[in-house]
Image 1 (spheres, rainbow, N blue to C red):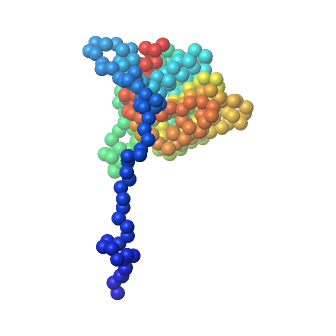
Image 2 (cartoon, rainbow, N blue to C red):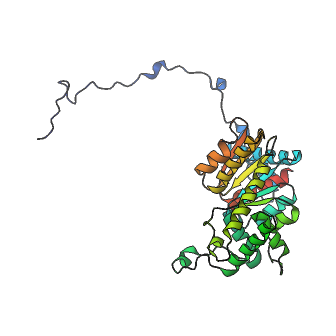
Image 3 (cartoon, rainbow, N blue to C red):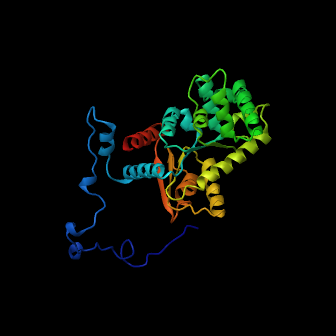
Length: 328
């Protein structure tokens, strides 16, 4: 049986016709009296051909992300002047897009005092250093079971880990030492070797099974686990010193390093380190949940500053580095 609804009144269409508001009585006030968030003094200036980077940097608008990036630059330079840590957490994509020379330059300038990496970083750092190439075509090699099976990568990285951990090193130092001493020497720059030569802590934080070197028969899982745990403790020791002006930057790690950083903050505070007055930043082409809450928000809530910048690593990192160099 069809549903029948009777109208509520005898008028066509039912209900009372809506009446528009009469705006004649609206109260106004002078524009000059209103507090505004944007002024003409914040406007960008067009870039001029041949102008310096400093001129370009100064031409950026005085608002939102541009002002936040200026504030981060100031925080990093202040951290160096106070002798506080400037820690860079890296996802592997940062290395794959060719940013190693920029990070090594920042090391030499005292603007990187510690590196934290996920396990894929050591693969790409090693391959770029010794072979000048990395990042295989996964789709093309996965079907035949060839993905991740490059012999030299699996064998040499695992040998370096085993030897280094047996000698009391973490994963980052083990690979850094190996690449720095390798014969013949790698023809290209290695971030891990550069850190080893300069005495800069480089830690590697691994989830077993996520990296191609775990697939090889040369992998010693006990050594991987022991080395990665030592690296966590070394990293936590650096995080414990962030209070009073240090900076931690998470660049391109969506899950693993934000979780590691949060746990390092927790254990440092548990052991009595205040961790107040420091800054964190997340730089990535997507703002994911864990970097946002575990790096930018939770650790700094009420005690520091957190920044988030969205963009490609191959653009954001050189921009930040150039600003640091020319603001120094």
